[in-house]
Length: 306
Image 1 (cartoon, rainbow, N blue to C red):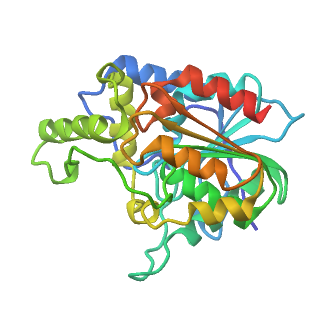
Image 2 (tube, rainbow, N blue to C red; image 1 turned 180 degrees about the vertical axis):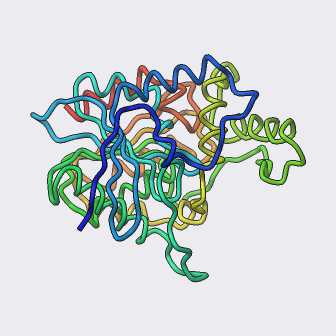
């Protein structure tokens, strides 16, 4: 049976990821992360020996909760600029998926084996421990979390409405023009910071002004807390098949300058392939669209989820 442990919004040191905040962490960014974290509660259900950290924001019990899944090399903080606005109107559940940040890791799978089912099993079992098996939810995902959410929805069922932001798994060409840097191979912290900062601009954010201290802090912490290899999953395809199987009202959002896809033809294609789908390309945004254009994305999600 799954078990749960609830705690206030302040981090529990015995359950924290192995990454200790660096001496060069920005105090203002840390305070903002702590402020948002304190608005919610921590829950640590365990399913088949895997503990998953969930954060719950908001108290509305009249509508299905909104569940949002973060991207690869991410954490619940991929939604930091969305949690306050969304939870003002709906209960919001944000996990650190298994193998990320404050959650347990997963056993390694054999080479060539699909690594996602064990993650989906732990995610589903722990969510059901919180809300009840089969309880309706509204579900969304970003990047790797988009494909994960699609496959999770097909596996679990009970999804009322479904939203994707910059989703992986679409199987079309990426538009990467700047190579990523392997920050794990950096010889010292200065080189590591430089690599992480470079990667934020190469992959995640389009507008240089959006690469602020908060974005870097989230990226730094989340990258150090990542133990799951998500890139192969995101590039494996399968999103269209999952959407067709799911067949629920779906919102598809991409940033105009998202380098993981060519957004306008992709959104048009996905919207045309099934009923009940709507899509939009957010002007001026890169891949991490819900951070770079938080106000617009928040408004679209609240309107769509209703």
